[in-house]
Image (cartoon, rainbow, N blue to C red; front, side, top):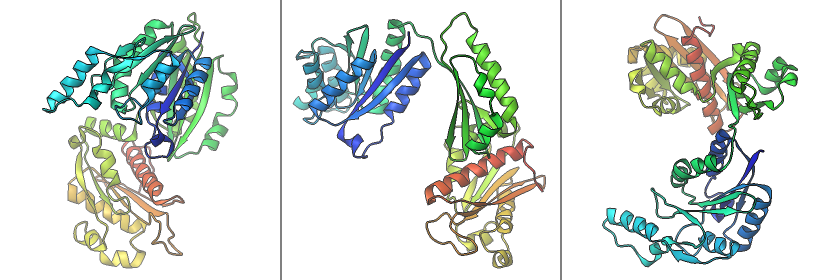
Length: 422
């Protein structure tokens, strides 16, 4: 039997776009890992009747109902009182929660106010799940037809801790679950439709319960094989691995990684293992490449540094780009960006370098070089170079994002010997 879940997020701030709902995406991913499929996600306002209706409808469709938000101590937080009405009960004080709240305030040498003490009030018929990272506890209810409903704080790090320490283990104990298996190929430099042409009718003959999904994102497409069959007489892991290898054989030339790999992590691992170093020189990307690289702990083992050289003066004085080269070809050109990359290579005394120059938008373009014209170059200390002019057609933010991805993928391909260079 497939266990279905519904997620209900509560709060006006979600519906007016003031806060982005990241909780649902995380919950869906974690539930899927243990074999619970999210059937629906609903966001509702801080309105009692709206919440009651959502609870009633969700319980009709799913065995597991997870609620986030509306558990603060202020008047606009009405989730607890609404749950009391839904389950026909009243609020009572939980001494353990009151102790937790008092301890949190004691850390900051503050007295617990009457408003904060309200956090210790919980529905009398719930099972309290204590919150180790905040003042609002989670509340668990056992419902009809072997169902479970859990109300949790909306603060992401509090909710995640409660789920990981308490709710996910409880669900695994309460239900007999078969985890859904996934295998993902990460592709670059090819579109969704072209991949579909390559795959052709291969996925028409997948085993029952196995599906192929195309998941496009900027500069990449994920090919995800999912296996939902819970027949324990089959070696599900081996069967998925076999089908993954078949798919890899079809699209191998465009695959750069698997599952949770990121291009930044792949570069870091490869460069450190091979004792390679990198320097970047950025103009239109404004330090976004360096930011992507340095977001990973341990990057100092291979990343020597970078420079954001927006002005022609810095390109000339720091990177050594010839002024005549800029005048002859324009600052947005493969000639100039190659010179920037070579200058960065020398500046950082590195094995590889990346350079960018372009018109990210929304203005600054010309008839010959409109907005979205971006040049990327990679240089290597062995004399190899790669450069390309991109014609991007999005807004500034996405143009920069695509520039970063193209630069990183090109660097990785060049280092792996999979990129045609001069």
